[in-house]
Amino acid sequence: MADTKKQIPLRLSAKLYDAISAWAEDDFRSVNGQIEYLLSECVRQRKKNGKYVGEEIDKPPDIDIK
Image: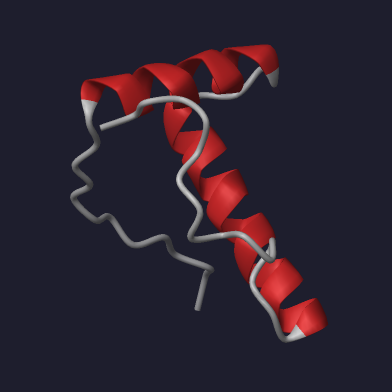
């Protein structure tokens, strides 16, 4: 069986979308590709360390994305 991808609905605030979009552009990725990359990295780091990516993962970011 081929490695299929699941499609899921995702709602983001306009500010969060804009921030991810700008980041994706910097990394030469689509917004979808950037989100997939970020989620993959988080899962990989958690599997590697047994912890979340950062110690302050629940700390709100410096930008207002809500």
